[in-house]
Length: 275
Ligand code: 6PG
Image 1 (cartoon, rainbow, N blue to C red):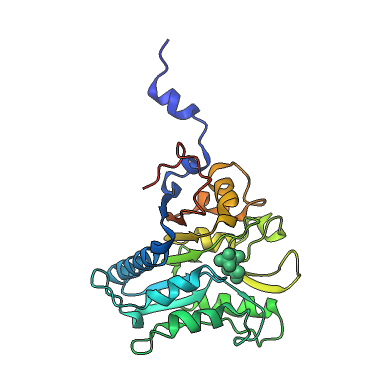
Image 2 (cartoon, helix red, strand yellow):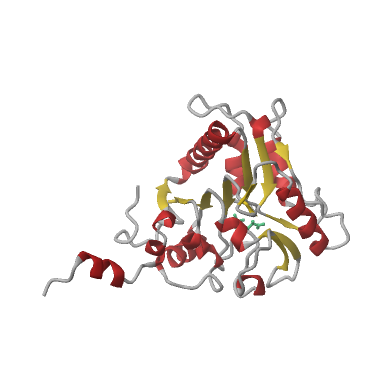
């Protein structure tokens, strides 16, 4: 007996990325030598599109080491996607609770790479004030700064145009670490003060709901050491509490993964045809 299409559709077990078709990620595996240039152009295109559509662009930047080569070239003029940086609000997706000139500071890395080239038509950079009394105070203040950007609040919550993310070897993204209590319950918090699970250092991060609420998520991962975790995040059904980078499955907007050949080397071709 043939089953009706309606019956089939209603009884299909959605795969992680199929539960929310919009979050079906695009995945590009790029030769390492082209990695920074391709992603920089993609980011400029996303920013230019947001400015075209809404007159401004709100971006949360990834920290760590991967983005620095990308940020160094992002400021280059692009004939295809010219960016009026004066209309761009830059935030941090997460920050270490250290002075802004500390070598661990994500703001310092961004200053030395991205901002160093944008000296003429500067973007509006919003560092996280780590001089406040506590990370909790810093998180609260940052949430207020984010919410204060005209036009960012939609349906009661901030909607970034673009959030750039890296992935740690343990599957963390931003500073959302595996098994962290902030992942256990849905909350409308915009930011959290958290602690790094191994060294206990204080950090402030965008919340799960704020990241998932963005119009576009762009993951950028490179290196052989990330190949295993990338395959697990993109091909397993592990819950977000165990692998926070799987949050892409619940993204409200579009999701793009950019991997260099080393980081993409353990993906099974069958599941994610490479564009
Ligand atoms: C941070 C980042 C963090 C980073 C991953 C990957 O503050 O460290 O926001 O989430 O993206 O840890 O870091 P690498 O790019 O250095 O591997």
